[in-house]
Length: 352
Image 1 (tube, rainbow, N blue to C red):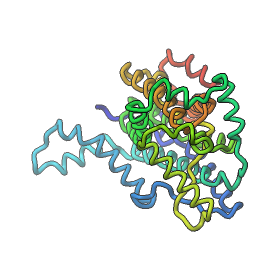
Image 2 (image 1 turned 30 degrees about the horizontal axis):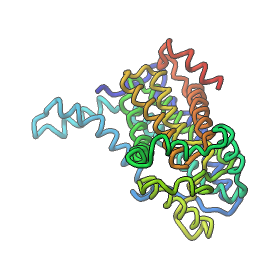
Image 3 (image 1 turned 180 degrees about the horizontal axis):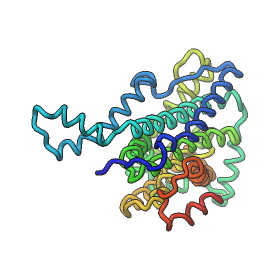
């Protein structure tokens, strides 16, 4: 698999100049909110160590993932492995590309960490929830029925629950893997920058949507509708998030946990929808496009089936993803990374 070629005409790290500025501004806003409300800033998902350790390790992992297949194919002699590796690094990872990839990772990470902290601040900044309004919208859309009940009746509560659970939690792997693939294996570096920027903007737009309509989600306000579901990985995740909520609300300074419950809009849907639409915009192989649309559909079903989100949250997530794609295109200006046939679709996304 070929590595991403460098952009011509200007330094490739300039692709992330505007996205990094936006992510940094969002991080500054997050720090301001923390100070204004007396809340602690946390580095979430820190089980692998602090960010200044995790980010370089992730960058090294990306380089190895790119180089190892080529090294295996070249089959260097045992004594020439290090020399061959050095040559391969210089060839596939020149300084401009290394800087661009590093800045892309930092942009994504800043947006993600700020998003997680803003989500954690939500119950302290916006202490009223809009779940009654969203519940009413669900009943209206389904003629008085509860969406979770309807899906459980159609799909059952046996094997389908475990399949949808696996789909839902696979998102935790999908996001970092897709970011790595975009930065390492995109046909053009501008394509990878566009996708990574779109995901970064998803975090920012998602945080804004949480503050616009703060809500908990059906599983936490109407748990009786999900009592018949078997224990799955989703069950454990929902219970863990609720425990974290209790700890943070009791004393945010006494725990390293972050508050992670918010319904509107669905970031699971927005991110996977972003990936599926961009697969079309960038004309990826048909099998990848089909797989991503199937993944998007199953993710949308899972969010309602398990009570993570209301139906309107799913639609809002898709709209948010389309907006993130358009804003990312404006920020990175991928230019010739967009095939001519994709231009009308991009214009449509921008009008959503």
